[in-house]
Image (cartoon, rainbow, N blue to C red; front, side):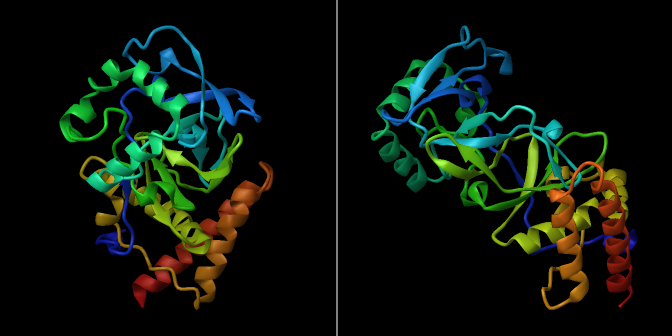
Length: 282
């Protein structure tokens, strides 16, 4: 495992979106009105410690809604299994002044969503992350959002889990909008990619027995979010047959049935072990 020590400077580990008031931002969609172009959302008072009042429903525009990846229970090694699809409101697509201004312009065209946020304004202004890091931002802004949040392919792993596991997540349908990329919650870390083959390759390497053991043995010393600052893995090269084969196997594992996935994962583990041993010794 000593050969894995180092840094993968071609990948960045990131934290998911921080909302700090999950019951207001992370919602259920319980209805839709095609003619009006609105969806009915339901708040989740049990989603946090802050009292947001009783469970309520509102009609809002779907423009700011994205499928949410909430936590470790939503995925395992090469397998996405979201039990209840929730949706997160992401009003700002970055945490710089230009993105805050764009968010204000965007919300001005969404009257129902604007009224929804205004109902919770006093609570939104009291959020800890907002007060600490976003003092000059619109009161409804979220933290840790950026272009990476909306990348088409993300390799995700949990902040806290008994076993380190990674999966590739792509997109899911949003009523009246169509498919949109998953947005991870702040309890999930991820690396963003523009190409599927690179994402599946990285996911395969992270799920390998060797890398998993290395990460789990170092979680006290390193932050799970910054694993690529402490973990050196091969850069994907589509001219190498072994790299392409590993990427294809990982993709197949994601698509496989429950009965077939374990066999594919075993084959994938052997392939990644051979690759890591060969490239480290070369």
